[in-house]
Length: 148
Image (cartoon, rainbow, N blue to C red; front, side, top):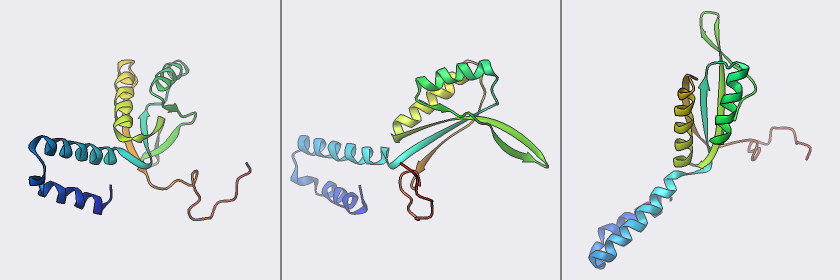
């Protein structure tokens, strides 16, 4: 919902005398649901990242099964991050996408809870709203053309 639509909605609310009380309640509820659903949906997609300690082969099998349940992908690589003066830490991570914020929050929370239940400590989780992705469109026209 853009700024003009929100303004129109608020204007309608201020003129509630036009509606019978029952109709008014229904009208407000319908507009509120429309407004809330707009805020739940990403223009492109939400991306969730869950970071865990590096995994043994046995742990990878268990985590992969959980990832499949919640439609996450377990990365095949480790992310090496600096922790201080010439020290590095390896991270394993899982990712998922969704256009619905409610959906991605639910799946992220459930995955984290289940990881901790099987003694896989969760270091971090985050959800990002993607606004630009060259996999969808090379907006800047700087990448080489891919073979189809």
